[in-house]
Length: 392
Image (cartoon, rainbow, N blue to C red; front, side, top):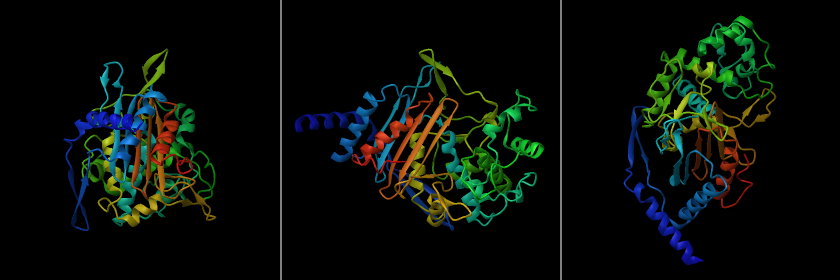
């Protein structure tokens, strides 16, 4: 049995040899005018424990999730132990996926919107407890704060559910942008779901408004702000904020599909694809690894500021909720933060184990219903079978 394991390990080393020429990338960022360097080690960890876990993940994908189409990256203690890209980025052209393929992150995009707000707060441009109407005067809800938008306690009507009313007067041939949502809310003044700050209710509308606030405060379009202030400093070269309004070029873009009659049918068109902040970020597993590593540093904001994003939010009564700023909190372990995303043919997942500096990223472009099950299965492997720690 030991000989078999050794033989498999040797095979894995041969398969992984193409990653050995990956270079460490030095990234220069500025914090308080001092230069900080990030070293991204893109070589795979090659110790026996990492190799064993990599083989288990590979076997899991080949057996239990053999229909998976997408990309996966897993790191431990900041070192990549497994990465792969399986299938097609475009089923019509039969273009194959790779580790730099750029997927729509759907709601995983929210953490970048939150980071934009955190950067502006740290720069003294806004306060989390400022009313949102300070920056969006036409918003008809005067008491909602930026903090409540960040942790989904605003009580705003969710635009996803409010769409039928939206379509009653909106030209369905036009793509809706973020400003259009303010127009919808101002014109119709739909009732709040609850008094702001009294409950948690996951809400895409809040992050659309946060995207607008980033624009108003920074004086830059949202996509440009995120690119210039986050993607470029971290050398996230595969990442863009895309909408059908800005129609920017996304390098190595992946297209969304749904299963249809035993095949795959394009599944991207929606008039809400002009909205950003709640979604809209395209990125690769490699770039999300870079993002993860940067969050352990002060390159973007201080660790004190980042900590608040990962802490429990709370409602007015003081009751804690399992959501910070763009990140969900695991119910069982304080050190686990994560987010899932689902939109028009795409599903995405990022899970961070901050104490151990472990990371799991899964990106899919067929709307797989089993992505969360896959994430939990990989979590079990990373945690050596401790399923309780993997409870999200």
